[in-house]
Length: 123
Image 1 (cartoon, rainbow, N blue to C red):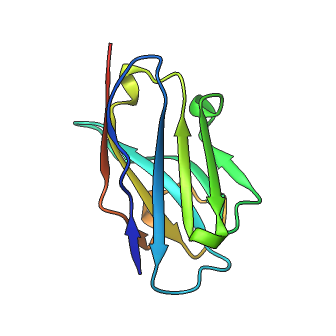
Image 2 (image 1 turned 180 degrees about the vertical axis):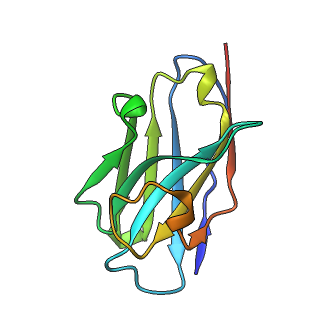
């Protein structure tokens, strides 16, 4: 299984960014994709998830109004749209796969990980 997740960058506060995560290597029916982030000196935290197929989503309450996760089954790709970016959103963002379905918020429950992409928000 491979997860390719380009799309980070440097953005001004208030701006928007879309991260993508392309999965390959097996069929993913029953899996869920999670997005996690890790800021310098902090633990990795889960922020959003979507079931494979994109019909259901789940968010960390503190980001729910600004983060939107979606999936494109035909492209085996999941997206994380981040709006109204804040400096505290600065982190390395990871996409990950769990076989346990949607609703799992512990990074330890995810079996496959992308390489991580840096998002830096300037004030």
